[in-house]
Length: 153
Image (cartoon, rainbow, N blue to C red; front, top):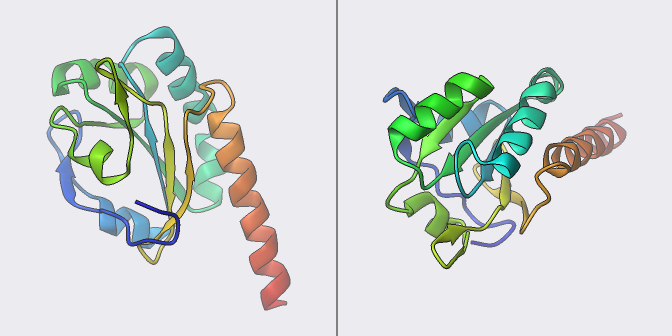
């Protein structure tokens, strides 16, 4: 998967078993898929808490952050309850493979993928820092908003 390419946006089930149409979410604005190795681990918890802390700013920019990990639904469910974010179990690795998220010794790489409203991969950040990831994505979205405003006005 490359930046500018068509995003893989299937209908999936979130950690609670609810149907989630990723194409629909992307069409509403920006879809932020942040891939992480293990629900509840220290780095993953820091990353998720930061996304949660900035959730209102993401919403104002029309962005929806969604966490993805290879953990099964029960582990993801508990993590989603603690963080208040939408989490997707990807135990078979279909989403991770589609976006080129690598595994090393069984551990998923911490990557973030930004999908625009046209269903295209806008940006991919590989091996992100869990403390800085959400801020970096938010800064990119703010910059894009300024660019779009400059072009239209």
